[in-house]
Amino acid sequence: MATKAVTQASTAVVKAAPLFPPKPLVQQYITSQKVGVVVSAGKMSRAVKVRVAGQEWNKLFRKHFPSHKHYTVSDPNNSLVEGDVVRITSGHRTSSTIRHVVTAIVAPFGEPVEKRPKILSVEELDELRTQERLLKDVRAAERGRSASVQRLKEARRQNVKIPTLEQAVKKLRLHEEAEKTRAASAPKGAHPGQGGQRETKRERRKAEKIKSRTERHAAERTEAAKKQVV
Image (cartoon, rainbow, N blue to C red):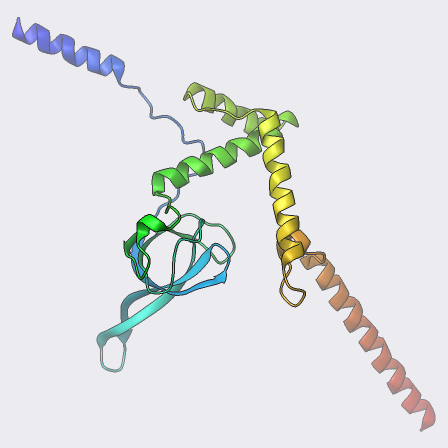
């Protein structure tokens, strides 16, 4: 009887367990965690510079010496100040130079953690990333993009809350208005950012090419004039 009960229990577990794990809605990256000190904060919006201690190999003395490396880290809620000891996690790219995000304050400097804006955990960051991806997929599926349609089907299969088209469009408009406001409020001497950037990389290259072509033609005309004078 005991053997029969064990067999039935194991069969029930096998039936309950899925054959394949659910497919992730967003791409999963290999991540690593580091602990460092904030050495620069407040100079960039939602970004800080963190110094991480390490070692450097010296070929002459053939031994390791103390060294450090600086990382530009995303701080979504502007929660950090200089001197904070923080834990950063890779795999959360927000720009071409920012590939890490703050996930915890190990030792605060100055104001306590309870009085600062909340630091998002890895799970909360993944959930936020999934929601942002679904907002884009809702708009893209309306245009007929097949990959977005398949991802929305997978989200429904996993019982994930899918935003409506009105919510997705409203989110996009709010983002565009925020970018325009941020670009307009920036000082004239500073870089206007994506919202106010008027010249693309291709246009700058084209302008440089025209400039170099004009200079080359001017030099050729100068040389021709010198030959005529002689």
